[in-house]
Image 1 (tube, rainbow, N blue to C red):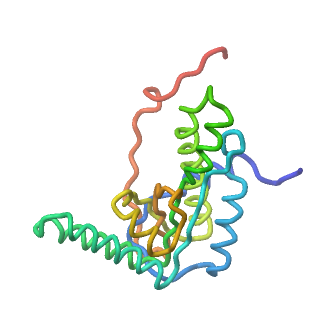
Image 2: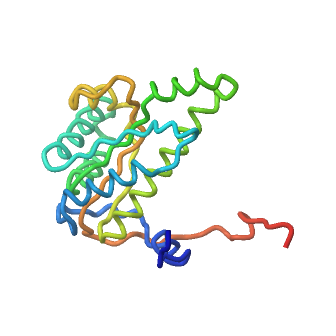
Length: 205
């Protein structure tokens, strides 16, 4: 299949992906298009032995707000009052965004692969986590390419039970991460890099 894409095009998208916390509800694309992007990424993300254990729930509008209200209430019951104020401010920032993509692993799919390939049983959970990470990153980059901002959060497992109950999800779905997205209401902070020579080696050239 021919393509006009080059490695530099892909790398430019990767470089542009940043953590942006200041978000609003002004989407640069339609909610339908967001869903199309998510579904395409979910279908095509690599997974070990084509196990396809990734599961995704996209929340817009009142459901997006509801997730962050649930998280607020759970954390309020866990944290001392003097520590909760800063947390509440942070959660309000996430709620101000346009949507949340929740990433899950279907543990029943992982268990099927473990039973099918016993010699690799202990490897399927980390392999599933690698596939999940790729999906999260693909969608983060794709939404940034559409002019949106995003940040990745991990309020699991403290909200898992309430999420499963609220959206009536299968018990085998294990929550991994939440990608908060929306219109850019601010700019990312400065990005710093460790020296490349500390992270990279090449041999045979």
